[in-house]
Length: 168
Image 1 (cartoon, rainbow, N blue to C red):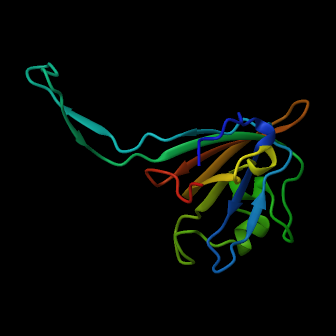
Image 2: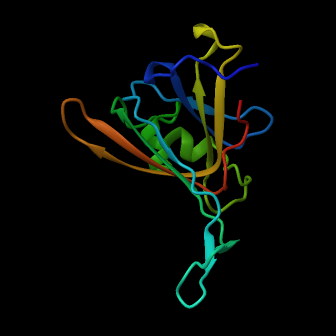
């Protein structure tokens, strides 16, 4: 199959946050968001051994330490929390339904509450053979709330993996 000729837009994307409950994770599909998801995939660090401060004719490159992926997005503030349903704000505050019922992707006894974040992109509705997606595993999610017209939630994600998984 050839590469898609359909340019994707913010209207094609959906973000879903999932916990580590098995076999069916608990999830929150982000709604009322700006459509500004931004993902940085640095891969492992590159170490360069210089010859007296110079790369030389052919650089000597080696892989160094792994580097986590990072992502950001913003959404509109609609709710803070409730014990009976998950909210985006509960994810960053680790409170309410998320703090009580959600399980870390690192396991039930993990010290750090991590999530998986899936970015789905609609393709089949636009003539592609299928939809597209990628998953960021083992994410620590932090954020901030800001008052305005409208109030917003800014989310920062650190995924402790070199590359996305489940890429389609």
